[in-house]
Amino acid sequence: MNDLILLLKIGGSLKEGKAPYEATSGNWKISKDKIKKDQIRYVAGLDNIYKNKVVGVYNPQQWYKIEKGPEKEIGRFYFDGIEAKNEILEKLNKIYDLLLSRFGRGSEKAYISVSELEELLSASSTK
Image 1 (cartoon, rainbow, N blue to C red):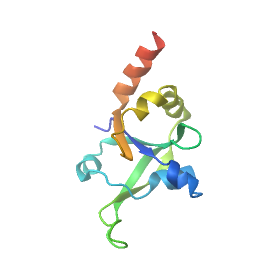
Image 2: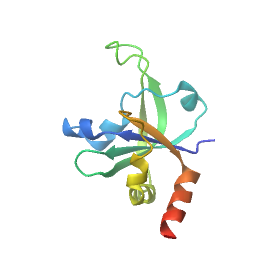
Image 3: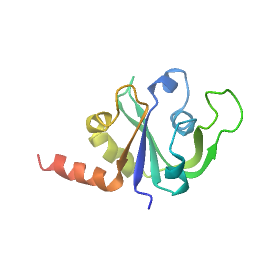
């Protein structure tokens, strides 16, 4: 069941001049099980430096494991994907501050389920 949204802080890569897709798609330490079991429906790139918003959301079509290259990159994953519907980007941006609170101290990634996103949106609209 692919119900997860992988949240990635990409502000540093954007600062280096990478485009949102390039910054979001590349070279992350991700659980092999989450990829094998097709649990990740969306991958979202958060610009946590300049814009303080989600700048891109993608549907991964294929995941690849890095087998060669610098030692620090081996075993990481990257994906080829397509841009998700704008609706999911808008929903994530409505609760951007809540998304940031999902990240552990110094962590570059976090997860939220699609159903949890809908619950948070519902709760925030009733306030």
